[in-house]
Amino acid sequence: MYLDLAVDFAQEDVKGYAEIMVIVASADGTLVKEELAIIEALMGRCMMHPEMRVDVRNLLEKPPSLELVLSKLNPVVLKIALRDAILVAAVDGEYDSSEISAIKTIAKAAGVQEKELSSLFEWVKTGWEWHNESFEFLGLV
Image (tube, rainbow, N blue to C red; front, top):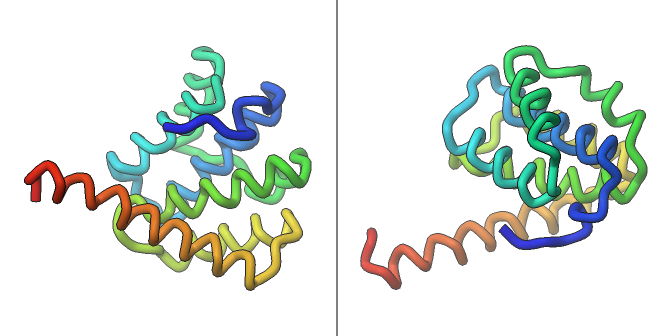
């Protein structure tokens, strides 16, 4: 996973960011291995402390309130969380209506308009297509 602005987040922001990932992943009531794997990767990318990762994993069974988490985070963290929440929602191959609802709530809190949100969804789609091309290059599909 690449490094970006998330590597510079304060630890309390990292926790809120990760909580948003958990909320989105669990929004449809089902956690799949792909969602768990991307959450772990995103926590690693943020350089999240191992003990804090345990705390976040424990939230998988009972995620916190999205509104409460959103209220604690600044706009930069919210925007990066929005981008990555779309990745988490897409990783299992489909967007559930509850995931879309959570994503729209995050977008509103971050001050992201519909046009920018659509661009993020397109970016994720293009990114997955780009990633999956590697399997073709390697003869794995």
